[in-house]
Image 1 (tube, rainbow, N blue to C red):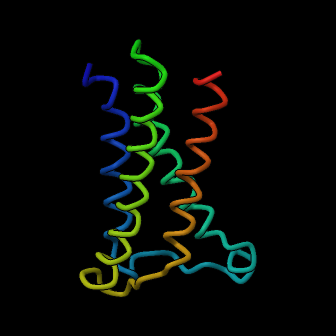
Image 2: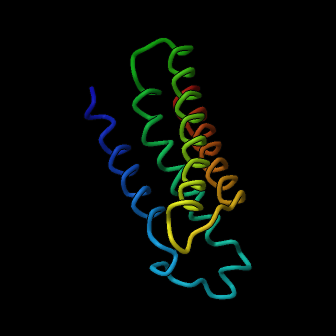
Length: 124
């Protein structure tokens, strides 16, 4: 049963490592990347993938639809809160990183996309 969650756990630690990199270790974005908000799309992808990897085992389980949907919402909430928490961690503990509310908004947008994808594909 827990094997289904191993991809999500692995992705969680990958995201954690990336978030904890000092600011000086990150590549500088070129001007066009700033124009298209590339870093926000990266946040959306990282957290959306994280949410999907944890939601899929719940959504494809043999449990009743209401219980599965409740689990998906709990996962979405937890990952969105974790995204906000990582912003505080970056502000107070990671050199060269700061708190960016738009990063958290991008994290939460990724989670919302994961919920919608989950609904479209697993809750027809």
